[in-house]
Length: 387
Image: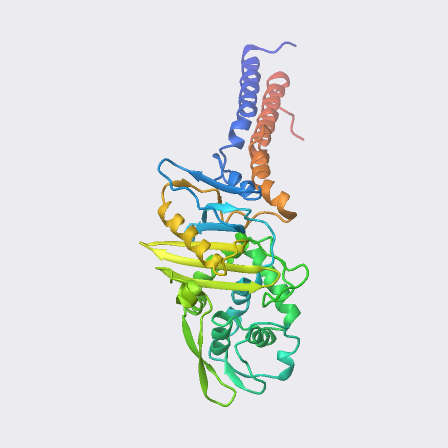
């Protein structure tokens, strides 16, 4: 029995429809719901910042990026997270007391500032020789806010020890700090000593420290402590004594001119790490965060002067450079090390936009094809007899 015109037309039409759906499948894969049809802004920057050297993308009229001696540095817009320029941004280096920014981000939310605590001698055990201290005394009662003043202003490792004890202990605090760092997209940081004291394997990067500084500015309590120039600290005999922030860009001490608009964040120094600094400043409605790690200049205040030059450049370059990365770039990247982080976004985008048809087009074509076969069989053999 031959197929009549009507049945041939029905089958031909259905086949053409199915073929059309399959042909459109690759296009649908790049424009369907949940798929980014355009280039992601962090594709190139995520990998670019892992490359060695200085990275900046100037537009016409942009100022020349300063020539700094630091082993690693970065400057970014604190509001948008856009990295304006960087040098060896993911180079893993000892952070010294700038790691206290991550300590505060981790511990501060769980410890109300008004809590009063009597210090046990065991809480002050094992403080590293040569540590910076604010003067926490055994058996003395302190408010948590006093201890945070000691952390931010005097970089007191003794205050860190007590706060860590209140937060579950030294090792548990270090583990939680690493978890917090990963949650923020900071994947270069390894914590061995929560106070930033030199320890084998303890590292961070200019990128990660900028992430911590930026996150801290979003916490009003953190922002208040890191911007405080001076405070009173309880003395052993029941009185108090003044303490002054050791961030010279904030206070203008030791012949370092204070930086106009500075709002913190934290400085640090150890013999192994050298000088490190995370600084944030606000001018004309714009907030920048900068990190400088281990300047090799002979000047004792090089970390402050190089940070000053970097912030000055950042404010002058506003609107005249294209970002070279984002402080948010690695928040959702999968684990697997720097190489995996650098290619993860690009790889996922290639998977999303290859030439394979998406599920709904193949399923739809199959269903339509089955309907065509059913129509053809009905036209050829007639109605199916009922039982």
